[in-house]
Image (cartoon, rainbow, N blue to C red):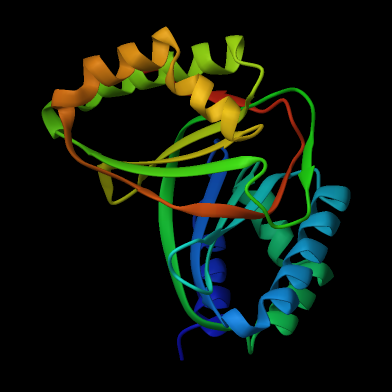
Length: 242
């Protein structure tokens, strides 16, 4: 059976792997019952609040709803390391979340990722209501394999500059698909739509577009709104390029 069982099995299979000396980023795509939105939201927020309150190794949990696909939910989670993720799976609040959502999730897709750049403003973020504020952006790009090193250098420099000089950029996370390192996923959080619009007008973003345009094979984004966003703030993981 797909859905809740798939979510549980995928989590356990990942946790059984070797420990890694880097943050663990988990990305789930969940098809939930659109008629049970409130029940799913409540269970997720309860798990998020308990996780961030009681587990030092849980760094961030963000959930967003697809505006074009009713019931489609994206869950983006960051853990300090594999041990922290294993510890999370053993908690009673996570067990409660699984129990409460078993009937609400009909399909689960797990995207295995490798973190490249994870950055947050120093202040913790806690938004527990649905809406377009803060502004959440999920962007996916496919890069020519011959340009991967150059793309990585350019995009991480752009994100560092954005985090440093733009007050409205609250978090920027970049990962690659583990089995396809040419496929990048960006999960970004802006204070509001105006902050995102201002970001797109900055010299560093314009330079990024100009410098990387010919490197991309494909580019797309998911039209989403926040369900709940929660992090500790202050995260900075920046992998030097090759």
